[in-house]
Length: 465
Image: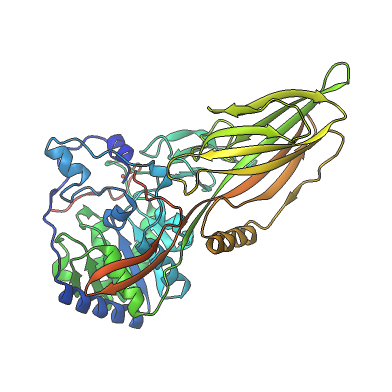
């Protein structure tokens, strides 16, 4: 989880067992168990996956209870590990992406997660097939109409508190709330009910990277047993539910799932991250009608006052035929004001320099400027546009590809608002399992690995005894 998330949680004396010993099955035993798991998945009719912090440790996000877990280090009075890269740039792991492929193949029916890192949604698991029991650090929700907003920045609060933004639905406009639970908050009924329903339906419930200590969430897999379902636990530490499992695997989650995918002869899809931003070009005539006063602003699509975390700076230049002075915008708001002759047309170039965690250093976009011309608005099919960008990123083995997905105009003041999409990370997975060892062939094309609980009446989470 995010170190920031751990620091935001209310203080609680007893966080359960920490510093838990890790166990590793021998290479031969591990390979045999991987094959058993693959056969169970192949034969399953309703596979449910239940995930914990251990699924994200390979993404650079520390767990809580392991030998170097956040709560383990806190109890020992040791300093917490420093995040090597921002939490908001964490990329889904091999396991996250394998689950996406299993879902697309119709094998995986539902995912239940205790994590707040948002990586299941970012990986491509459909929202309707995901229950995030403890919330999502990048999600805001509207308490009035129920709309959800996935952000590219970490929401500043936890505990279901009001944030600084409002619902964008014109008929609503209510203040939004964060979705991450603090210790005393009750699990969200909508998420919990869906999780219970699918666990009851599940003939295989696969628990990945969880110590199964937080109640009532840890009891969800047990609901499959009444209908004859089987529980499989993949975790480095022993759990209180091991005795209920048909199969317990002590090994790294990525290694186990890579082996399963190889046995099933299924490819693990690449992860392509696409981020959005908007440019706002505002124009007005000078009082003598000879000049155009214009402003270019590079801003978040989530609002002018919200962070734009993946852009570090913007360099502005102009056509070679123009003698306009170049500018570097180092701090937000990324804003440039200029005055030019009314009859002039030219091209402006924005070199966007990306923040740490992005897979390339920069990219450049071109903005045409013509005061006389009237620009008609349009809105492209975002899904189709993103697919083309993903295909190009995979073919190019790099990121930085960009496209305009929407443009609209405002008459007063005269403005052109353009939404741009940019590929900021590409990560591929191509692995072999040999004698129990995971051997990646290719990892993260120019990508970078990153680092970084309920209000109202209801079931609150607590440690199982």
